[in-house]
Length: 367
Ligand SMILES: C=CC1=C(C)c2cc3[nH]c(cc4nc(cc5[nH]c(cc1n2)c(C)c5CCC(=O)O)C(CCC(=O)O)=C4C)c(C)c3C=C
Ligand SMILES: [Fe+2]
Ligand SMILES: [Fe+2]
Image (cartoon, rainbow, N blue to C red; front, side, top):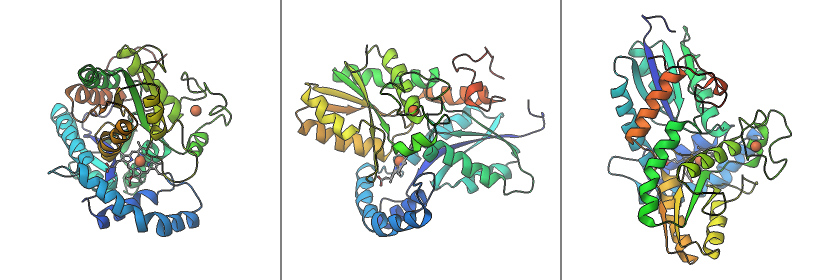
């Protein structure tokens, strides 16, 4: 328990987004994002060449065009929804925690958000990376940067991290509540759980045993000691939890899993969403609901890649309709869950100690 005079702060961290849907701000954002060695994990000289000769001359203009299709009057959807969530969580935790939002890349930056909380007297921090699953390129990068920023001050504050919540019942229940009306209104004959992909190399590097991941087709079929930090295994655990709540039966029949948003030519985690869509259409799936549970806020990857591009692709392949299930954004059940996870994490800094995790001892929330 923290000292009663200690002021607590909650830092919600999401990935980040450009300041405007124009080429120059998108280039600035992509430069910061793709210079991160946890995102593009190759030799620094290779990364510089890839970025400056291949990606940055072309991609920013194309991405800016995509951002313009989903940009909201108040700004980038990822930022608008993350701000909304932050405001509602702050309201719920008033008097207990000072709350701020930070973006790993772009604005509001982690240094600015940490400085703002410290200026409000915070000396005990809870950090909640807004990604359900662990990945070097998302949660690990956000935590590493937060720790780096905090360690720059003379008096380093107390910091605890909320563990990955890929099978937290509150997270699964909230997504189920959002999905149910969409699935029934569409009369969906199939649900695709499309997660953000990562290079296979990243998954192999996070395998502490060095021999579990990709060792067999079923290596992600259950969470075990060997794969509890495997991004792919955590994604499948989420999909199973949602499919069960939605009453979808066995995998393959009315639901399947895929991975989207790949970049470059190295192998990413499979199956790829853009290759699964035509297969589903060919199999006779007509009305497809797509859930993107790697994201807790709608963003370019949900609204444009799935809501617009994947829909056009599926209909072009003979499907009748594809509907994107909205993300959690600031859904009341998600706000409840964030509040609950923050309280649960008080004194439980690792995934293994998460009170809701299988095998963890029963524990009552701190307050
Ligand atoms: C090597 C490239 C990338 C890895 C690895 C990666 C992992 C990863 N990303 C997210 C969440 C988001 N990514 C978003 C956009 C985005 N992602 C990449 C590349 C990698 N992501 C790029 C180049 C972009 C920018 C857009 C584009 O040009 O296509 C977003 C949306 C941001 C927004 O502004 O809306 C999110 C969110 C996770 C969770 C993750 C690892 C699991
Ligand atoms: Fe990404
Ligand atoms: Fe794995």
